Image (tube, rainbow, N blue to C red; front, side):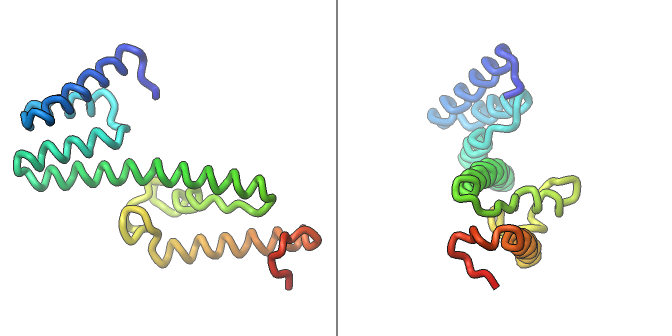
Length: 158
């Protein structure tokens, strides 16, 4: 986590207090707790989901929208990383080439920060990103076949 025990305890207390206030519809108080938790550690995606619900409860739709998008963006990164690891494990088990799409996309992005210029939405690559991923797959696949023609696992060899 990167937090020491004291920080983690403070974050959990603020987060849980925010959720309790949200349940009671004390939206301003909930937001205060969530903002305090965010100052301690802003990596938890759920924090932004509940912050968005609190802003929405107040009718502050612009802030709710921003908080919900932070939730989606942070969730997307976790999902993509977990999915990437599953693909890596299956490729290793099946002895097939692995293309690290996450690394390729991060390398395309300014400062390795993937943003909406590489995606249609917060999750799906756009045409340019798909093309770069496809080219990487083609290059790796062809290199792999050139070295393992006798062990192609049913893939067409030309």
